[in-house]
Length: 117
Image (cartoon, rainbow, N blue to C red; front, top):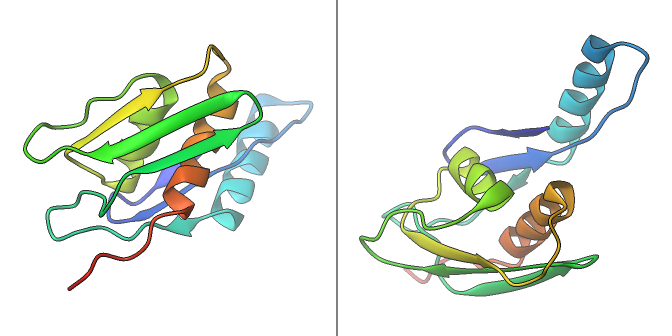
């Protein structure tokens, strides 16, 4: 499960349980525990290019002024939940595992440094 406030906070979490509702509740609590704050520019974009690898999933995210979000799979969802606009993202691995792609995206967003003022 991925959560975000569309203003720079985003997190992902997983949960298992006997009932679907219990699993969703556990995943929500795990996602809230794993929230990160993403440094954004004034235009709600990212300040610089980042590359991340998690397991076999590799993700590259770069700013693309006035282009909108160009991303696929779980990367698009994570960026939308963080409120990030005008970026170009590329999944460089052959991995189709959405959870690993989402975790690689979170790792890439963790590497961002705050923009120069």
